[in-house]
Image 1 (spheres, rainbow, N blue to C red):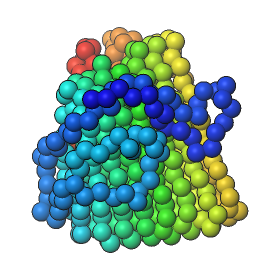
Image 2: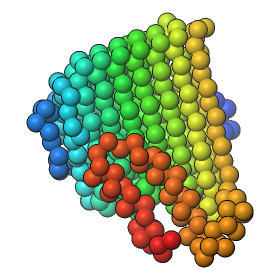
Image 3: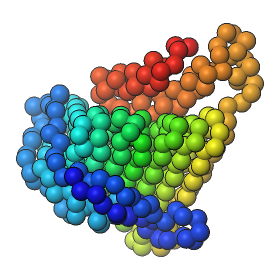
Length: 346
């Protein structure tokens, strides 16, 4: 374990420094010990390779972080259509993990990753989606609420390839999430469904960057979450429409529910454009529960606290529905249940 002072999640293009949104400074432990994965489901169609990497896949977490991640790694490779693989990482004591995914031409590679334990957790995932392939990745972060958590995901998609990401943030004291996608091939696509619940005195820092370089590529980023008392969250969402990506379309939206008081929310949707025949869209909504909804549920014997839980869980349920593995989907539902929150069942 080493104590570091590094920059994480820098914007591709800087904005006004006074906004304090260009990047985040992380001062804390970066584990040197490797986390051994527990593979609970491994279809026969998938191949495991130890300590092989995908160095050509980019990251947006920050160059310094990449230099610090040199531990053991696991590559999962698919050459055909496969059922979901499930991997558990227990970061107890503070550990780093490196996972690489390679979907060969026309292959299907679904993987669900669970992050648990107490201690600083750093997870790097890099993905290569060859022509015509599909990668479905679900990452459920449920590390202890006294821990720092850093997740760095990068993907390159060739022609007609698709990368579908479901990301759920449910733990951690300070969470840092970086997602970088290069839509390099014509007709390649990326979709992200990100859900989060940032509880009292917790913070979440997210940086999603999609680079459209191939023609007629498409990206859709959707984030939905809840901010509770004295929580902090920043969402950076960048769609980069690069010269030559004619016919590309990029969309990003965020929906935020505030529960309690004194939250700090920052959202910076960024669309960069160097091509004429493209489409870029962004939007964000933020609000509190409607008093009429609270009154309606209260008239049916549901307390205001239970009503808040019902609405909050409904937002996260919509994200969980995208997880391909039914067992992981059930587990994710249990993690957002009133019992898991320490509340009463509505």
